[in-house]
Amino acid sequence: MKLTVNGNPRDVADSPTVAALLEQLDLAGKFVAVEVNLELIPKKLYATASSPIEGTIVG
Image (cartoon, rainbow, N blue to C red):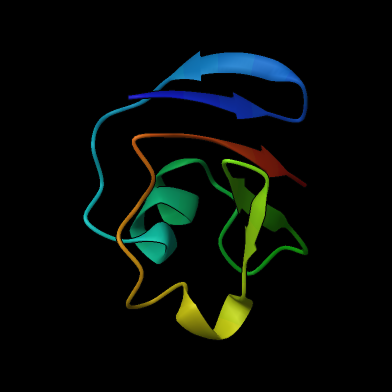
């Protein structure tokens, strides 16, 4: 999957949830904002929200 992390394009393995994706990126537990198609994903949904096909993560 293609993502933008802190302005840098990244290719990462598919992850089932946003929380799993953040873990893969070593961002779990850190202050981040996850945005998909210009829509912020609330932190309370990270554990249940499907990870984006494409999106932006700002740490």
